[in-house]
Image 1 (cartoon, rainbow, N blue to C red):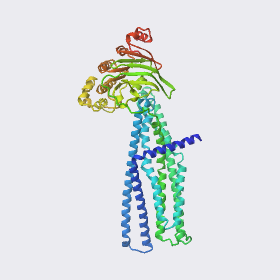
Image 2 (tube, rainbow, N blue to C red):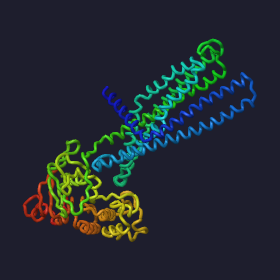
Image 3 (cartoon, helix red, strand yellow):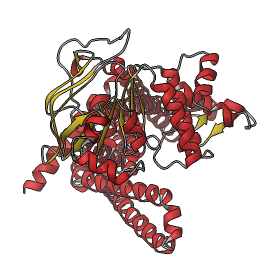
Image 4 (cartoon, helix red, strand yellow):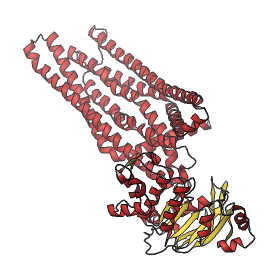
Length: 598
């Protein structure tokens, strides 16, 4: 019972959100409804002309020339209705495209505000499926179902206004049987939303599985597991096929039932008209006799009376699909983004920048997994600080907090004396450059990737940054130089070359704060020396915080912080810590100038 109530609440929430999203495209939706209504009114006129033609030919015995104007009018109506139908499809598509674009933009903006800390630990394939396939799943709702909701009321109402003056009995039959179709549509479609959501979840799992397989293809081949992975892919694909067929089963069953009940209703009206013509019935025509023209007019309009209702039932699966997609989208949008109250400060430091942590606490998973516990330290402008410690001690968390990807549960972070939560996020990030272990490069030219540091930079500035980072050393041998195209994640470049492009970004950005997360990890000796030389040049005059295991980096630091269990356990200069008899001294003695593996 509780699960059923939760499902109903989810459907209600999803529908409410969907109707809210329709606001930016009300004009297109109204146009779609207007064109559909125009086509419906022309349909009534078309039925009237056809009835007049039949009556004139059979009862009045008119010749072809006398009926010719009606045929011309019918041809014109057919063409005009086709044009209105085309316009309705275009307007529905435009409405859907506009809304889907806005939803995707809002979704991406929300994920961006949540930052890398949200994406880390989540399956990127499933997240990509939410942004792409599940947003696409909203198309049918806005392009067809929403306009059809209005037409399912307006067109039958218009038909009734023309049928009732001819026969109140036929109009009453239409009015009495009309609710049956929506009723059975709802009964058959009950639970369709949950089926659609399971289908989207299966699609997310399949997308995630395919992405994991592609990214780990080399490992699978190396351990001879590629054949086994084929079976897993087949299983995941089979699950998705079954879920998709479940959705289609409901859609086809719904259509079949709606067709059945509308056929029964039309048959009842046809029987009434036939019995009236045979003289068995003499009621329902306002005391007048039912003409062939009037009866044929009603018979022509009877199927069209139920058609908008049947179309609504046909598009009901689009509603279920959209509600299922909305629930998955809302899972992402419902994740709260911490926002500072009051006016934010647009930060433009003129010189060096101080960084300060004051009793900072942070825990993941709603407080279940502590990461930092009372961390306090200060980095003065132009100072170089090395952050060392075992894996999981909280070093990367410190960087994420400085970059604004995470917010502390308690304590304060200040940048140049200003509380970090009072700074405008964009201006805050302008003051910092970050270089990690694995540089993130995007499909495009090398120049485009460097320009991410400062998009408005001049051509000369890009060349200077590339020269300072050593990028020109290898681009000079490439056929297009800095305009050479590279693949995703730097495909086509070595690790060292990709890292130098990341360094060129930092040179071009020229931010006063430099955050380094083991930028030389995984590089061979040749590239390591080149990157270290570029980093030394980049670090000059900047506030630098380096997360490192390399003893050479630690020796260069003005101050060293040792972390363990989310706390600062020791701090000081290299000389002071080496002579203190602390764990750091034992590290130095054990390392003998080699890399510390912690």
